[in-house]
Image (cartoon, rainbow, N blue to C red; front, side, top):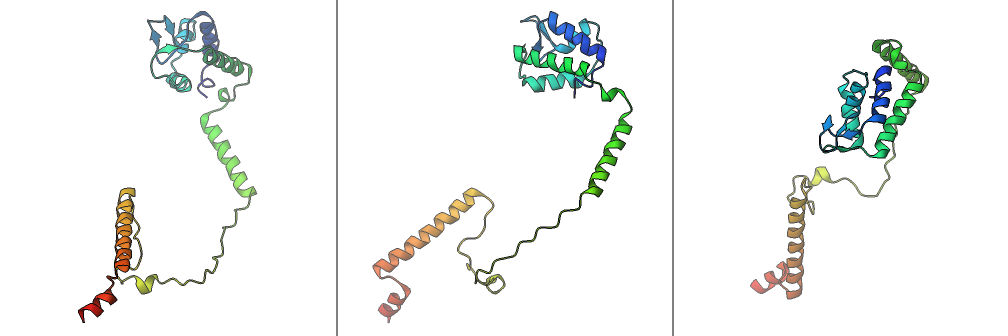
Length: 187
């Protein structure tokens, strides 16, 4: 899209500049390698246009974190896109942006009218044989074996406490220290 937005004379100048200069990414000029960005190459070859979106798109495409020389693949891709853009008819040159937006809205409306709205998906609940006892037990303390948590560390703490409580109950059963045995020994 950034290449399509460039005027034809800038695309031609950029093609000439790519052939005659070292192309870099991540900067306008790199004094270490002597390279220049594609937009500066276009400027130096007569395509004086200021399109900042091209520079952002170029650096985004190449993944530039710092200034470096462009790879052969990156330069060949840019060259191919420029040549394809010059060869193809440019729809952006004809008409205004408002006309294009109106055309898109009309096409969307036609599509919306042509296709029926999808029916809402309703799934039938399977009967598990269990009844919902939430209302009955909601006021009873500790009726759920573990309350819901929002954080993993809180969940781990609750799970550890539940495991500890279970192990204490098992130890009490093995040792015979259950509430029923305590009631008999105290009597």
